[in-house]
Amino acid sequence: MTRADAAIDRLVAEARPVPYWTDRTPPSQDTDRLPGPARADLTIVGGGFTGLWTAILAKEEDPSRDVVVLEGGEVGCGASGRNGGFVSDSLTHGLAHGTANWPDELGDLVRLGRENVAEIAAFLDREGVDAGLRLCGKTVVATRPHEVEALARSYEVHREHGEDVSLLSADDVRRDVDSPTYLAGMRVRSGGGLVDPGRLVAGLLEVARGRGVRVHERSAVTGIERRGNAMAVATEHGEVLSRQVVVATNAFPPLLRRIRAYTIPVWDHVIVTDPLSPAQLAAIGWSENQGLTDSGNQFHYYRRTPDDRILFGGYDAIYYYGAKTDASLAQRDSSHRLLVKHLTATFPTLEGIGISHRWAGIIDTSTRFTPVFGTAYAGRLAYAVGYTGLGVASSRFGAQVALDLLGRRRTKRTRLAAVTARAVPFPPEPLRYPIVQATRHQLAREDTTGRRPAMLRVLDRFGVGFNS
Image (cartoon, rainbow, N blue to C red; front, side, top):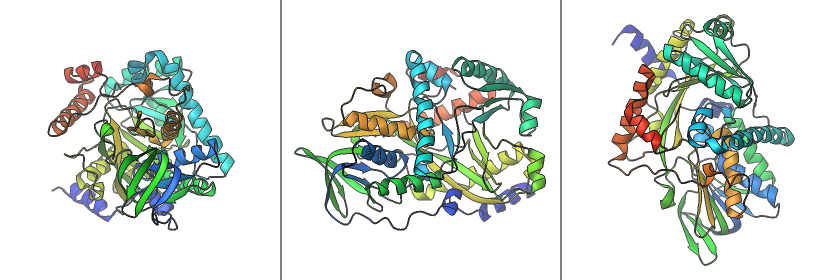
């Protein structure tokens, strides 16, 4: 082991193994578990963004509606509280991916995505929820020569769809955020921004409870079944009988058999630095405080925090055989060490800076990289899962779709093929793991060469994968 490797090992070992957001907004301590058998009009399984938005929107539709949320752990303990806080207005995992998969309705999807983010901002303002939302857009950077041309093509697509976007030379982007790795950039000033996901979870929980929603933590659901005209949702503390159910479990193993093959849990790793000194900040710049991502399939995302740290995540996405979601997997030393190396390659002036937090969150990844919607039990149950990394904002859209489906409403959302079309299922184990690993290898190969391998082109034809 080299001296540099030993130093990185020490930095990773000294980091707190918890999300940065948890330290800023500790989990709620006053939400009880389900006390025993109960009845409701609507039972929501899952207390993350999708579940909380579903509860709030259901009460907006009908304030008299009796709504119960059941969460197996603590509200927001899954992907909702473990992400980087990037807010995207995309419902298609980017314009290129939307063009490849839903060209005929991309205009509607773009409009609905923009409306969704605007409505989130208006809701937070109206309800007095301080979640640190800033609609500052983002910058996408090219760090390999072949990515420069791809970024220019992406710029033209963004212009065609009315985005406030600028194409930046290496000098331009480095005047804003200085990294020797940058070869070009695209500054998108529309399309989203940043939020503190911990404070967003806490704010949504407070609003939901204020509207009479019963939220029960530590109430893991063990089964769902139809019982006459009602749905029975079982926990070890009792069951809830209700007319309707929404499953909002996302990356965690769903209780509904039909959707188990549509998503897989992929672990995404994150580190956060100690606060930067004024000199370190001055060397980097970053005056607009926007989020940044690079252009590869295996990409990094990073941002400044309100207390002048840098959150740096992504790249090393891991799927474990058998779709494991054990909490112990949130700490993977090799992935966190790799992020430290990539951080200091991006910003060499930060070499040796302390790492305060490290963790991983589970991305509920679908084969088509966009959410999967549907119903079961003769329309008494609806589900919205598979946001594939963009659920911070699109979870609200997913909640609207789930409620539309329960209400059997033909809306601008439920008429979309992106909502009604079935996703291609993942194969079962033991085939799933080697196929996922082979796909990951091919994505890395494309990042290196700039050419789409044959395997990925075949998957593209079947609507599987990410057309970056």
